[in-house]
Length: 240
Ligand SMILES: Nc1ncnc2c1ncn2[C@@H]1O[C@H](COP(=O)(O)OP(=O)(O)O)[C@@H](O)[C@H]1O
Ligand SMILES: Nc1ccn([C@H]2C[C@H](O)[C@@H](COP(=O)(O)OP(=O)(O)O)O2)c(=O)n1
Image: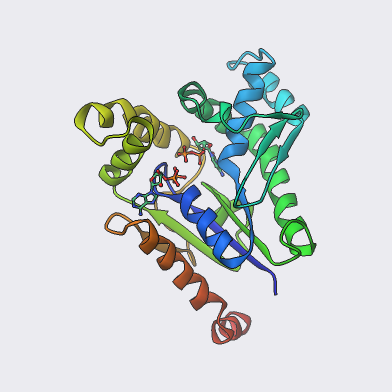
């Protein structure tokens, strides 16, 4: 049986880490679509593209030689053969990425690649046809609205700021939280202009991780998967 799981949510909600763990537990492939927008941003810088020139940015992204790994144990990202896994996580890229991610022609192109990656896993791919967990901002709504399981992973702004501050600065003290604010609050506001990821769309289950630790969040998502893929749930969906 093939299963496609779509997970969306704001920055710091735990999408990447939780999705990877869910993919590992279920033996599925894992697609980090945020990494694709980050790679596009890295490539435009590498190619000296003027970020203010939307057409030039879109042309560069269409020509980008991107290879996305989908192994949840080691989700590598290569551009033109170069491993950009670390380079796409720098503050410089995090600060610039929304400018590229709000370019609608870029979104069309990356969504096309994302659908192709999902379709490849339905047939064979890394997972041998078992399926994939794809996460981002518009997977439940636009990229894979027909996914078997769709989850919106949320957490309070306070929890998300504290998590990211701990990750980047090793502390959730006041200074670390303030240094993180641009990456969470401003970026989500910019990204919200092109994707709706704060409220679950119809048929999308919400998992709020504000009061859950990491393992509890993974278990909560796995519980949604078990519920929606149980034979009775499938029969109900077919009758509807
Ligand atoms: N439920 C949780 N409780 C505490 N920390 C978490 C939880 N979920 C994720 N984290 C941690 O928060 C940080 C951000 O998670 P990440 O998966 O990168 O979020 P996102 O992909 O949504 O931006 C990581 O350091 C991750 O280990
Ligand atoms: N499907 C997606 C995935 C990410 N994006 C945008 C939104 C973010 O600013 C960037 C990077 O996404 P990423 O998930 O790596 O962001 P976080 O650092 O986890 O918050 O890409 C998007 O617009 N659509």
